[in-house]
Length: 112
Length: 110
Image (cartoon, rainbow over all chains, first blue to last red):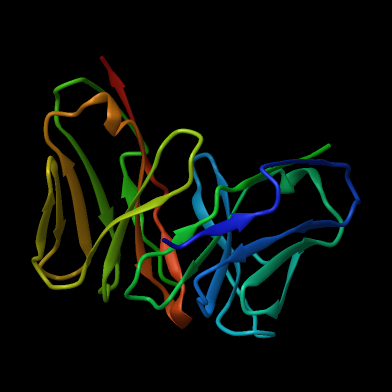
């Protein structure tokens, strides 16, 4: 069974801090994604990656960056956290567009 | 970019009543996926529809893909408390990414 692991379930950070959210998948998937989830807005794509060192902007990339140095790991970086980045962050991976997207348990980030 | 609109945003039903959520797009979709997110959990894949007019069933859940492949629906017959959660549709956007609808949050009065 595919396992997508996010390093933290809850995080509390201060405004202006640099924040790293880590995600690891164990199924050798090439495609990995970062979404944020907010009430009434569904899941919005921040960034995705289809290969090591490759990245593509999603719908809301502003204020975020990503890193994919190894196939199994996809990191989301908040360069300078702001309160409007308080949200649930979900990492996901899949084999291809015709297969299920597998999600991690999510990281609930609070920026104060 | 690709957008999918999902309605309603919320639905509250009595246990045993039916429930339906709808997903609409202004453009033709290559496929559509449905996910369920239990309270406090993460989205879990339910099903994928690919063919025009396709209907698939999973026990009390019926999934439909429109003839024009621009809309889809999920219908739950005789809801149970275990059906509580948020249901999302998702469609393939450009560049191999999945675009999600806003979700329908289902609550059930036992």
